[in-house]
Amino acid sequence: MKRTWRCFVCNDIHYGTQPPEVCPTCKVRRAYVEISSAEAGKACLPSPAPFTKDDFRRAIEDFAAKNEFQVNPDRERVATLIEGIFANEANHGLKYCPCRLATKDFAEDLKIVCPCNFLVHETYRGREKGACWCGLFVRR
Image (cartoon, rainbow, N blue to C red; front, side):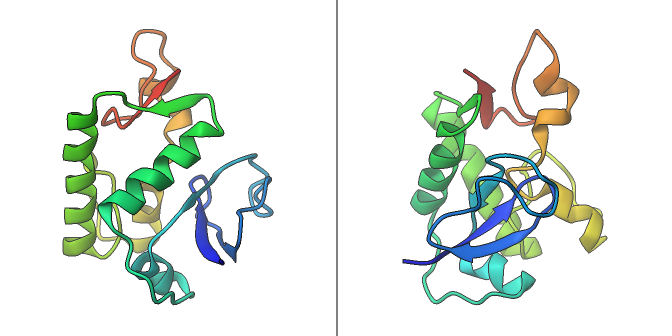
């Protein structure tokens, strides 16, 4: 079954059974996450199936399984963050990170669609924390 994928670094959209191993746009390896039909529709690709919170949790777990980080083991925190992500989608049209403010500049705000490119941020690179801004993803 074909699904829609988005590169979390450059927001490249891919429609297929699996995401590319290497993003053809930014050349980052394993940088794709599955996205909802609503998010894909905003970019260009409609999809009939709704994307639930459980689908999102599975998508980020699959995404993390292929990388050096994991979904935060604190399930209650993750559930709260996913609520915030879906609230942002309901209010602003895309799954913006729950810990960042949208600027209403669409091109700029694409940088904070969850999962954002947190690997370059000090909160992740720093020795003391090793997590994305909101703590949805943490170093293994």
